[in-house]
Image 1 (cartoon, helix red, strand yellow):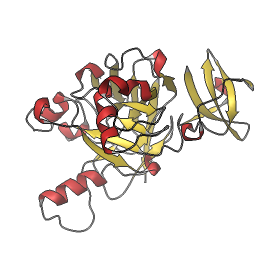
Image 2 (cartoon, helix red, strand yellow):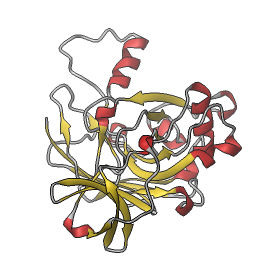
Image 3 (cartoon, one colour):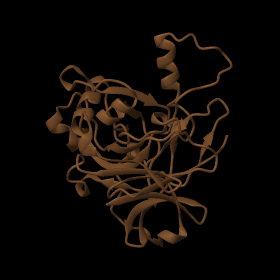
Length: 280
């Protein structure tokens, strides 16, 4: 099913898509931490009459993955990662980064290098702790189009010392901006995605394709990422895992986002995610 959260007549609801209508399943936005969505319809409403929101709300954790496509590693000037001697590079994003379809991302005054990163998002459905790769996908509730919008540099008004840790923490801070993790327009249940490693992925900026790849090119698969993350922390229902971006980011060419730009990210079968950029 394609689950959605939406506003209608001044109230919050969640449900699933059925053609041009939404089957309403409950009041309030979808919150997997509070339990799986019900199966008793409360009514129907045309999709055209609602305002879609982020399909998932209140994720306990938003986990990002850095350097998970070789072509993206190469475009950044680094050597290929050797999987036999590597592990996934995980980081956390605050819940204030979450946004929904059509929600704008503000361009803050402390950066002039806001960048795009189309990614496959994975939503956990059942608690996972120290699970094997063979067990990992059984803990996935569904998948969603996402965009890990990132600031590549900052102007803090303080001269940077160039130390390795300064560079790292500036990179990490670039993942924390408000509304920089939009997801949507819907959350597709895992039974409709037989192979998460066989999905086309694209991102357009102002109608021009900037990224085009497949999840088949991931260095670490969804199963490997979920398993590895579960060895470090307990994964709970509603946790969101962003699985990394392919080549084609703005940093590779020095072309960054400006107010008025519009991004559209899309993972095949998961719907197009539109995100406008506005002045901060």
